[in-house]
Amino acid sequence: MFALMEAARLEALHLAQDPATGLKVVIAIHSTRLGPALGGCRYLPYPDSTSAIRDAIRLAQGMSYKAALAGLALGGGKAVIIRPPHVGDRGALFEAFGRFVESLDGLYITAVDSGTSSLDMDCIARHTRFVTSTTDEGDPSPYTARGVLLGIRATARARLGGDGLAGLRIAIQGLGHVGFALAERLAAGGAELLVSDLDYGRVQQAVERLGAWPVACEALLSVPCDILVPCGLGGVLSGESVAGLRCAAVAGAANNQLATADVADLLQARGILYAPDYVINAGGLIFVALHHRGESLAAINAHLGRIGERLDDIYEQAAVERRSPARVADEQAERLLYG
Image (cartoon, rainbow, N blue to C red; front, side, top):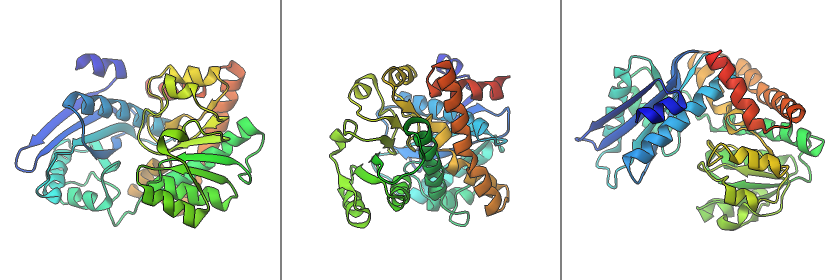
């Protein structure tokens, strides 16, 4: 356990359970050097506790890097609740989680993530102040999508010679809250969309509303396109999947898209430009953090606009040094976090 923490430079790892509600939760706090650790709460089934711990640690590290490069006075953390097979009272489970968050006295601030909703955050808020993304505060997904759109334009500038969307062939993997909102914006800009999702109802909706082309989930990663946009769960880019890619760039909303760090170098070797996920998908964090702090919508949107500028800078440095943008982004974040 300590070896995992040392490898990620993790500050703290908290585990708690509440037999009465079935709560089993891991909270990983990667860094509080720049501020309290903010990060979403995942509520997903895991094959075992070790898998949940590993996921929490890696996601928390990504949140630290995301906050640092987004220019936020925050550290990175992540909560992972292992979803039990049967839940008697979901509200009670999240209230128990809220009591645990409160016990950390502000070291960690929780938010919506995969498997959770604003209604869950409302339950958490009954027992702690250290929660965002409640129904009163609003859904951060549209802001994540807006930031990813800016990142796709920056990626197109760097790889395709212009940031216009008209005529671009874009393959979107995953049509959840962020993926569908992003698809709407891309379609409005004139992009041709190829889409997949495990829920075929969402695919059908994209076909009917946006004129998208449906693609089988197992085929999307190898479909010919200009930009591949992963918007589901992480780990989709592996040595095997990268070998089959037929795109000029990868720029998506999913966290932890690279199965391992060296996959970034495989993409670089194939001439596929990669938008570091924690840079391009920072819009939701920016909204949550600044809204929680009481900033105006104008200030939030201005801060959001810097996502494209940050990617421009990363791509320029990566091109000069002939390295992967992922390596450049990691080094920039680590300088901010560790000096």
